[in-house]
Image (tube, rainbow, N blue to C red; front, side, top):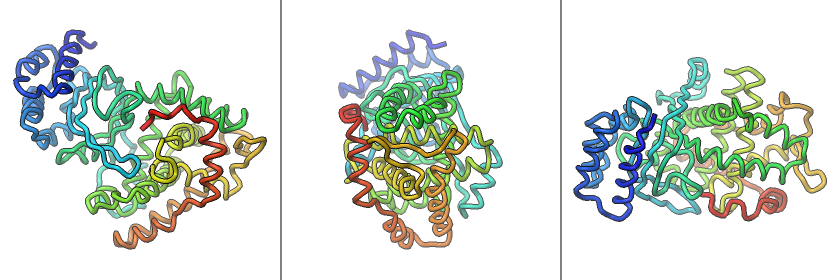
Length: 382
């Protein structure tokens, strides 16, 4: 149970930081220490990180999840960076919330993943949280809803958990749901939305899908190795990596969970990609998520698993259990690329990624049948 005085104190701290008042914060941190059950050394180092601009103090705390108190209260303050429209934006950010959902991959997923990767990178844990207050590049319609570890700007962050803002995901899935009904015919949109909007399992399904997607990043050459070699400075490489990770995630789902759950997680992925990501302001010219989502749709169209009928998209399948057919081409191409990565240099991988391209006719179709019907709904979406 959140102490309301603790919330008020943290929000006072957030306001001080936003106003540039980053000195003499000890009194506020002492009060937070008294009201919450946080690791005291974490609060001490967080105070020093803010006042001394020494964010590397947070690395071990992030890896050990000391930002979560013993009673589940979630507090983190640090610079966070996002890539949008070919630009790197770094912004001091803060989150207060309640950790509610933790997903870790089962042993059999790790086994199948090892077959696709020669690296020994640990899989990322995903912590879902209910957001109470925030500032900066995180939280709300202008912030990131899924926070990847390596985007935090301190040493060691890449070995920490991913953070899934369930409050914002819930808000965005409602927008995505409306978009899906505008893009697809009634039969297909109902098929996609029923699992995602399930009042009991919907949140868990969406969080689980993120977990498989993150696992996909660790296949092939290895995400950390690519990141450390500046591979993702190219926005097209980031786009293909997102598309590849989705494809690998479909493979991992197929191998490790039952058909019913597999189909529901595919539906969640498609709703996210075509109901949200493909509508980001940068468009197919510059936004990696738009390009990745468009590549997914391109595979569906070229395989005949998505068609245009009466000015709307449609999947020519009869029930949810056949949804794996819709993403089969992406899965196969992604696995082929992943196997290539295992025995290749970063330069060879860079060349191979350039072959995964978005065709002009696909971009035109995306603009007409996907983005245009939902115009205006995502003007604030990062």
